[in-house]
Image (cartoon, rainbow, N blue to C red; front, side, top):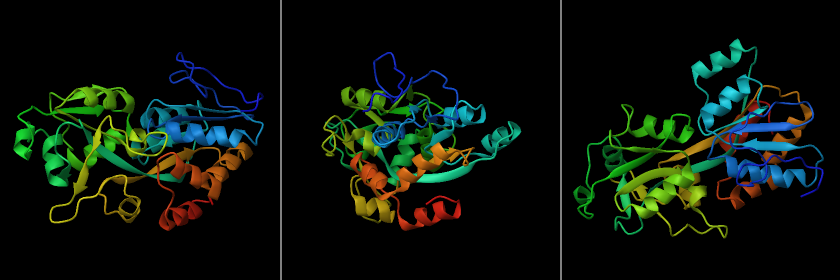
Amino acid sequence: MRSFVYFLFCSTGLLIASCSEKIPASDSSVTIKGSDTEYPLVKHLAEEFSKDHSFPITVSSGGTAEGFKALSMDECVIANASRSITEEEVAFNTNKGHSHSEIVIAIDAIAIITNPKLGIDSLSTLQLARILDGTITNWKSLGGPDVPITVYTRNEASGTNAYIRSQFCKQGFPKNSVTVKDNEEIIKKINTHLGGIGYVGSASIREKSGVPTAKVWAMNLYIEGGSAYSPFQELAVVSGEYPLVRPLYQYINDTGNKLVQKFLHFELSQKGQQLVKRYGFYPLTSNYQEQNKRNGFE
């Protein structure tokens, strides 16, 4: 990485940005905040982009909702979002004098993860819904061991949390569910808890080589009467046959910022989309490419 690229440091020493510190926007830099799912992807994209450009890019996490708040408060110029913006968030942004543009940068398959020793390799979407709403409380009901089920969830700032609730349990998770701060903690908890189940972006459970981690098991999922698919099956993901697929967004208030334009163009370029795939996500399909064009990005 060239020496002129400016970095902030987390307490752990991780380059790119503080994971919690507020970062003021600037005409001479690009600041990005939001989705924990997108954080590692956009961090890598920023690192690659900065090899050929002299202006600094800082990337931080905190959750999709925090990204929208930061965008409205001029604490970032791009908000990473693993769900679409809500009407309330649009209104808040508008009240602050902004109007946003939306771009899709990648496709994500959400993995439903369990302990690898559980012995259940697939679930139907109906079974998953009954687990997540608290109707099924023991793995024995699904042919597994006589072990109580514990659902591990993310906090309400998480876009993945909002997506899972909207799909499976609009009334909320079971009362005994456990809320954790990020994907890494969900993986750690389930790796040591036989009865645990949770959800993460599938890229977060790939090793650097691209193969799935052995720390957790990613459930094959199926709709009743259909075939089961893994979140690691690219054709099933891009075709929608794997049932938990979503776009990953970025929201921008100042699309006239030339630095922002350059970075967005890089993300959507052939090289950028190759990097999307390298880091465990899925490149854009033609429908999302057309959607981006309609929104003024290509």
